Image 1 (cartoon, rainbow, N blue to C red):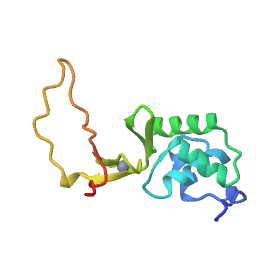
Image 2: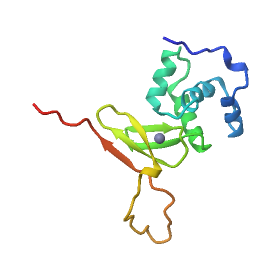
Image 3: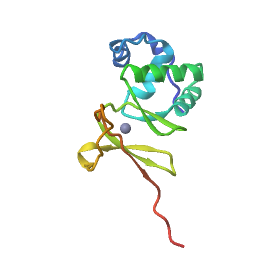
Image 4: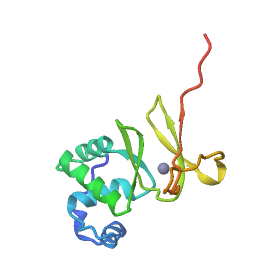
Length: 146
Ligand SMILES: [Zn+2]
């Protein structure tokens, strides 16, 4: 089990620079959450983040995790992917893309936009324009015979 290095807070790494550039003060808790989310493209729920922080030694409250995620969303570092109200993922891939959601494993994976065409989008309500389409394609394991 790899333990998270708690003592490495002092150096200014790319993640800290990314937080500062977004106008976020890089507190130790925020840095730890940023390490989980921003080091590579990933999809994590708040519970998964909390779980990983706990396993790495804890010290970050649920409220801090939620507040930090809200801040990261507001500042454009991650986006929320809401599969349903009980399944909200935080996605560090900020490019336009869609998702497969596996109903059995609960895993979210990216669909790169060039593979996908959506036709027949209805006219938006009067006075509005379409700002984006976020598609979640739900999948499950193929049924096994016998
Ligand atoms: Zn994604």
